[in-house]
Length: 111
Length: 116
Image 1 (cartoon, each protein chain N blue to C red):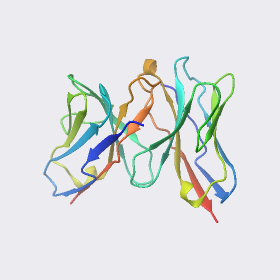
Image 2: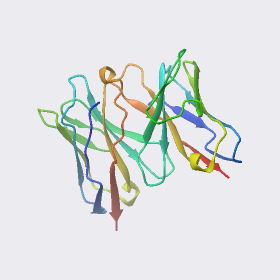
Image 3: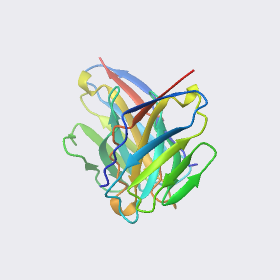
C-alpha cells in the first residue's frame, strides 16, 4: 500500500493561494492520487483526483510531476470556510483501494 | 457524484448494549464498503473491508466479534458494535468505491457513538 506523507499543519490568510504537497514514493502504476477534505464531525469529502500532469476543477487544481512520486493540491484564494483537514490518498483497484489515511494536513485560514 | 448515507448520525447508548450503524450507497452498487473509526483530532483508521455476500476482512487489532459487519446487499452494509463500552465511543465512518471510476471513494456523513 502506498504510504503518503504530508505536512501536519499549514496556516494561511484569506484570499491567498495554498499549496499542500504530498509525497507518495511507492505509488503503483495503476494508482490514482485523490485528495479529500474533512470538517469536524463529518465524513471526508472528495476534492479532486488525478493520474498525471495537471487536473483542475471548480475548487482546486492538482499538480502531479512526471515521476508521480508527489502531488500538490492547490487551493486558489482560500476563505475561512476552507479551514479543514486535507488528506492525500493513493487509490487504485490493484492496490485494493489503498485506504490508509495518513495524518492529513490541518489548514487554518484566518482573516 | 455518488452518495453514501449513514444512519444514525448520532447515537448514545448504555455500556453493555449493542448499537447498529447502517451505511447505504444511494445511487450506485457497492460490492465493497469500508468502515473506519476516528478519535478526536486523529486520522481515520480503517477497521474493516466489507464485501457483499462474504465475510468482512478486519484490520489487525480490530476485534471481529465485537465489531460485526454485514454486507447483505449491494447497497447496504451494517456495523454492529456489540457490548459497547465507553472506550468504543468514537466517530464511525463508512465509504464505498464508486463504479466506473479509478478507485474514487465516497464517504458517509459519519456516526458519532457515545457510550455512557
